[in-house]
Length: 265
Image (cartoon, rainbow, N blue to C red):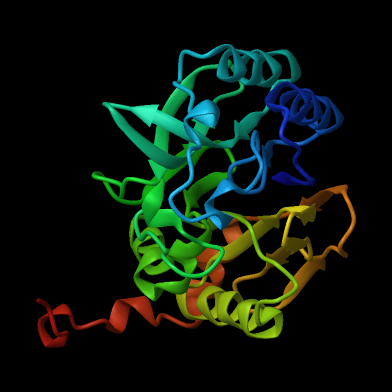
């Protein structure tokens, strides 16, 4: 499959952010799947404690989502946008899975919610009630793990156990964070779970936060296939998802798991 990641900055204008996203979908029409950074239609409002972000909250029937669905249909590829989503009365950090026919197949929501300086996410997000999602495509199975979720090893492991060969991660990482550790964290999880991992990050400065880009694509052997710099760009990468199974047969770590011996609360 051919994967595209749109490493982009965001403004306070949702229409401007939408227009940029649609433009990148058009540029990726030779690809099979495109995904974006975390909460791509808005500024990163969780940097402010107990703020009001209701103006950025949208439903799956909103004009913003309808235009993204139309762009997926017109350009014939899977599109996975990450938005501040209102569903069943709750606000979520959520990634939609839009088919090449422009239909929303399902929604994956952030499971673990961070609460720390500049990441006051518990003030804004409801935890997922239905866990991690993995989607079938003609090219292989694709799982979604949203930003902070990747720090909990159970997240990518759960996707792998559900048959994911590629896990995509919409992210919002800054220059102030331990970027080398973040890279190795994903490389090790790709190696341990025999999956490709792709992380797409924001770029640009938003008040006190400077987003660093450096989006990554990692192979099932833990090697870096591609790494972006800190500028706005569209990253395209060819992946053979069948290599996930080859890696799993070569290093069958998951088959040796012993659930009965693990601590459970």
